[in-house]
Length: 212
Length: 212
DNA sequence: TAGATTGTTAATCGATTAACAATC
DNA sequence: TAGATTGTTAATCGATTAACAATC
Image 1 (cartoon, rainbow over the protein chains, first blue to last red):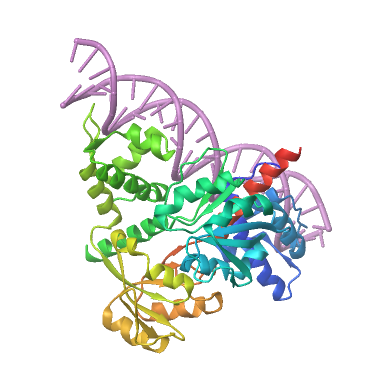
Image 2: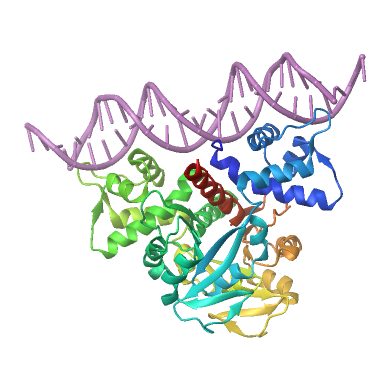
């Protein structure tokens, strides 16, 4: 399992979505050029990215779509599904529980926890919701090591630490908090602020140019 | 208004959060070294990033925190608040409507639209929710040119086009759809799939290493 | 066969890190 | 003053793009 550049990893799901679309449209093969045209990624870049997945294409024809799809899925380990759990069943948490695509991306949420579950013992989108006090016990029993963090900011650090205590090795962090955890913990942040920063600046630049 | 590298822009909000924290703790000045230590960004990188904001520090002392904060806010145009609107009041949309930090980041949602508002004419977190049919009219009347897109995937492209027709210049896209729009439209995607790709791969690599 | 496409090697570009002089 | 810190210039690193040979 060789190292793949992070920026390549981030582009792979973009290609994947496109490939599913092509497949639905009945296409059998596709060229790197074609993928490049539809994704704003340079043709050569697409080739390099695909090379990382290990696929080999057919000169003059392109790549077999089914082959590409399974190569990318394998690369991302999206072909077999990992169990995970979610903490913080507010609006964002509920949105994620209802996000059915997740299972097509290798993640199945098998339990959710909340400090004050509206309906304890209930199910939401087929996922059981428990009170926080059940977490330590259940985590060790279920052997899940991926946690999704959707709590309010105030609780984020503490809950993250509880996750670790329960044996978690990776946290998908939807809070704006920079978690302070041992460096062997895998953390991926969904960072709205960074994205908004880029948006705001671009808008401001556009306005500037107009008025000047 | 000079160009700032995108990666610098994305780091600025991280520094900003930290600076607020220092300010609340009563500190007056801070060194780039200190910021670097708390953010996993290299010391020199922090210096360069701060230089882009135009602040000048004091040798042996560091940077005045209030000065840094307002320099960064100005850079991101987060000091004056832009109006925006939101389309798609599902769980994710509701989460954003309730995300009060937004106004501290230069964005105020002044209206929301949904195909089937549960409670039409109602307010959620102080924001009025309208039916989609009201959008064209209201957009031109309110002169908002930033739209937040939280619809289901199927509707994303069409709603985005309606946004443009209503005079929008920037779209903050929370759907996984790659919007196909004129290239002068400013688009920022919150891309969960890319983030999940990195997480999945890292977890898979970790597992590999353990079993081998 | 000729043209389109692949995959690789080399060149460019941009971002990060290192080195160091300037200074309160 | 000496030490800590700034800000800048040079060196490195990694990612993107260009060029081109190989091939169905």
